[in-house]
Length: 209
Image: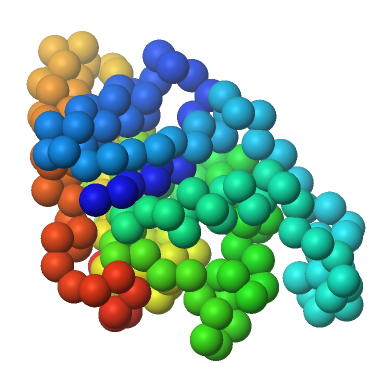
């Protein structure tokens, strides 16, 4: 299958980047094809312009979609599976990825009845300093899942899933090494197995957690 990855982290030395590499290794092992939008490396502009705002609010119907946005949409159109990889900063994705959604999810392409882009599946992989259990206990985990799965992805993918790689604060070197190894193996498995990617027709259902 064809997989498009939207990756948002400024450092190649980050654990998020290690997860990206492990996930891609899993894809390669399973014979899947992939492309990557590395938002920081490509210098993606996350700031919606005044013209884009006018177009999206319905007041500027003659304003065209920018070339960089069309390029991102074309990558998603060509993919069966979408994957978003990023760190959790202040209970959300980095601003560059939020701005990517602001600009790329355009009217007539990502929303309005009958015009929704559809993928077979979408998965979110995010690193977090706190554990997934703590995020869930404090309500942050459910909030993040709701924003990403029920709003940003919604029914633009037939199936969606959310994967937190928590406890990424390296206070305990020995404990961290063990968790990191397990998390990288998990990312590798996700690439091999592609949750939701092996069944169903592209765009045939509703996003689920």
